Length: 152
Image (cartoon, rainbow, N blue to C red):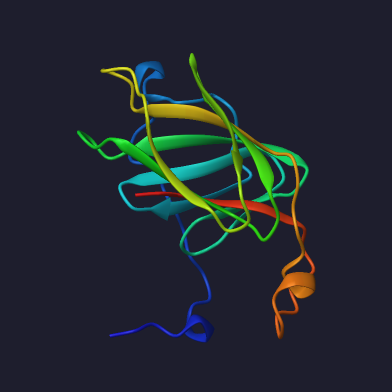
């Protein structure tokens, strides 16, 4: 059954074990985290909004994520632009993609991961953004959003 949030009062977490250095994607503390597809995404720095299905990168901003894949899984990244033409930059180790997207254009990428690595640190940048309240009738979201990313 479903647990009502109001019914939860206290939650305790206990570490089962500490990860070895070879199991870490980054030694930095995460600002927030979410599970998307076959990966767990940790926001390390920058301006991004982690939501239930993916993350919005703020328009005119950058962010850095640690992406930890499930064992044996690849990291597939889906990108959907906001309502304005944009320049998108994606970087992980030596891999780099910089490209222009038209309003609401979508693309998918396979992010390369070293064979024995648990994941990657992904740096992203969005040149521009739009407020959904200005572009979508009935939407009251005033955040300046650049583009959406999600791992699949």
